[in-house]
Image (cartoon, rainbow, N blue to C red; front, side, top):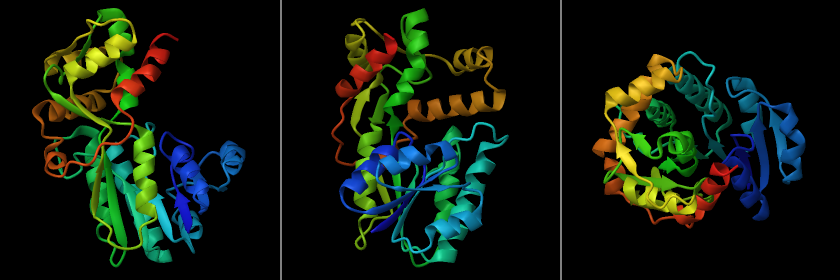
Length: 293
């Protein structure tokens, strides 16, 4: 198959590219960074350098493809993240309509079934809705859960305060995922040409926050590590104190509350996936390496 990969050589797209090349597919990897060309070619793929906002570039790249993987790369410089998600989703839609690509796999998120109350994940909701309007394609939204590497954001807190703290914690359940398990799921979906599903959840482990803290604590030599539940006011004040823009801080807290209440995973719990291969114990070695570096 001729497959188009977006996301350059990111956490998911790099292992995805490696897996699909190993299976004998012909790949083009889109990146906005010309300096990535050599690394992409070294993986056995063709580099397509351009912007996702350039629909002419996207259309040219998508032409003749059997399948495309669409994701929204981070763009923290955009003044309105929701607008950025919608603009990129519309760019994908236009390129798919122009070229007639039949198989489309979109990286979304758990919680994307909700139109509001999910912080930044609301952007994934918008993208799903935009792509759902494309007629006569085989479209699957892959909805991963909480990325393991987001746990790295708690390292400074552990070192200074001695615990993990957020608006979710304790007995709150947190379903987490490795990018490698996401890449494997996406590779499987891209190869499907029939009997596709509209939604596929991907998760690697499902634990309470306290259970997760115990695993991370053991890996870093702090077996008594706790994950405490903090108030919205305390977390918001801390984020603002670190210089996070107010609107971003509020979205971060809103997302955390959706985890705390279980709202974010409500649809996931109705369609639980078979867990991937990378359990938190395996990721904890990487967490410990970063913690001790």
